[in-house]
Length: 282
Image (cartoon, rainbow, N blue to C red):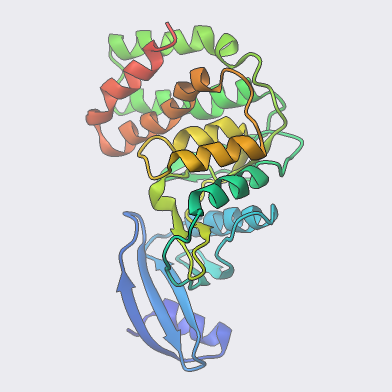
């Protein structure tokens, strides 16, 4: 068990690590639960070097500012590790998704003056550009769709079919998003069924964010990409913070960012889905 990270944690927290149990996690980091001689448990992420863990920590801290949904407390962070409070997994209590939807709506009511974030971060292992802008359409097209499109071209997916489909988006982006203007709000950025958990009280907990200030429809669209959320979630959200008319039409433009990212991360099986989403707006 002895390694530099464990030694570092012991020195900073003035404790001894008595055990480390590996647990299942994402494809980027190694995850474990560690216990101390002070009868404390922590969740440790390691196995990646660079700024990713620091950016994740900053995103978690930003989400706590909304005081809406439980977020794991950041205990320590370094270039090669992230130490969080250990939250025990529980069972969904009655009305879990209704509660989750209203809490998510409350989070989206925490706003900023501009779209973006004070630093770039990651969406999965892909860099996510958060250059601040005052106009959402400009921000979303430049920092989200165009960035992923150029990465897809670099990765060899930019054939004529792909180029023509993206040209549809470039021509129509203003009309697609027209009428949906809102203030920049706090987004999780990557909320799918694997990026929330249920705590010991049966309450939702948000994990693994890709935080920025954007349009809340982008956050909600991502929840539909792989499922994991039921109708009560969306009904409760709508009752708490109604969406503007036409959000169903705009949903595919927001799904596109994540499908392009999956194309760049996992390969050509996502290419046709990306093309279909783009051609939806012909």
